[in-house]
Image (cartoon, rainbow, N blue to C red; front, side, top):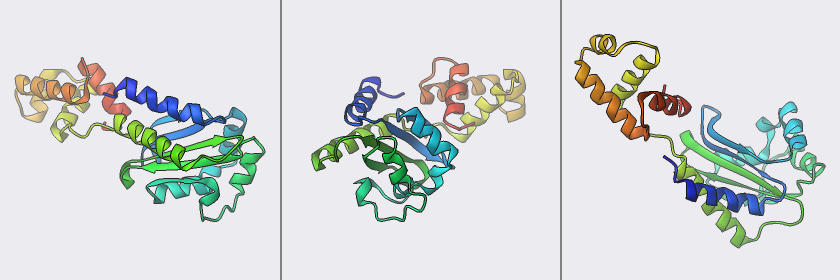
Length: 203
């Protein structure tokens, strides 16, 4: 489970710097993040969303193809939708993008200020915060396919005896798989384990 203090510290670092808010898409899989934080101005978010700008945003494009960090004004990609100019109309004058993680589980954070660019030292500190968030929100990889299969069967409302028979194992072996899945997912109950697995798109 995430280390709440370190995760909250990382979010505070981003919030303290980003006077106009930030957007964090953590562990993006199949174009969807497992976790998302949005503190940018609602009017900008509405404009950005209704305009379908995410697919044409140079900051997002940069994040998908790089690891590290950069200021908006240093991104050498075409801005065909004038995303950065549009952002200025909402007082998002200066910004930076941070990207971390493997391509199949990338985390991208975009933040904005109204008054000035981030210094090099600030960019380093902010990137460390992004790495902390990425690591603390890391989806569970220790759950085995057999454990996932057991959780999926239970999630469908099947009784343990029925599931054990279907899987060709004893009830005690099924209980052991469910207990191991709970431990790997940091869950106290099978119901909680199923929820965590669903949230992490393991089911």
